Image (cartoon, rainbow, N blue to C red; front, side, top):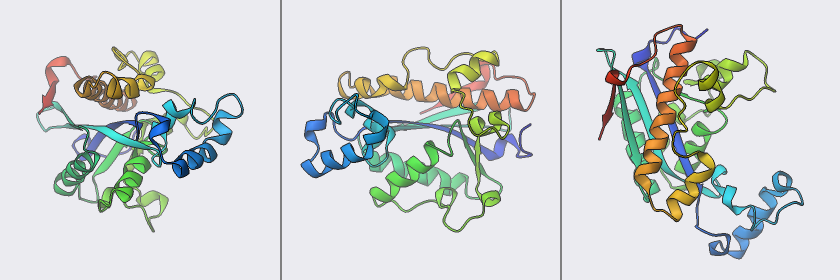
Length: 236
């Protein structure tokens, strides 16, 4: 079911995002109006733009990245997890870009995430452009043909061509017998944990759990044994 890509050539990842400001009122009047226009059809008439602001983090134009977690297989069969997180989004993006440029810059290297093609990959690229961070080759898709895009998406793989079908990572891990990544919080709580609790380490741990879950799902798709706790190593 999976591609012929070697496990060591894949960088698994997940991101956590929050609204760019802690409250709707902190946005400029122009940005408030633009947010209202952007979310008009999603919120319909049930919510005002202000009431809908807690969901602003899902749009790269109104959100920001507070954590990028990555995971990769070593030749010794261990799986290493590392997170870039903090209040300084530019540093997060630069650190992640440096990782790609140093270790994942070859043609055979690919990135893998769940719903990555619709969310993670374009979100990172858009935030890099907004923050004037040069796009690394793995995220620069301008002029590339579909088969040249170095991205894998476990959601797309599970669809089997059914583009109307969406399956959350939490559901997929459940039906495949993989430990749930939602042990503590879920995506809807990240904004509160960031702005109210100010607990970035908690967000990073959650992000790492999702990254690990993506790797485990990929292993199941490949009909390979799941990772054990002893094989999982967190890198500071």
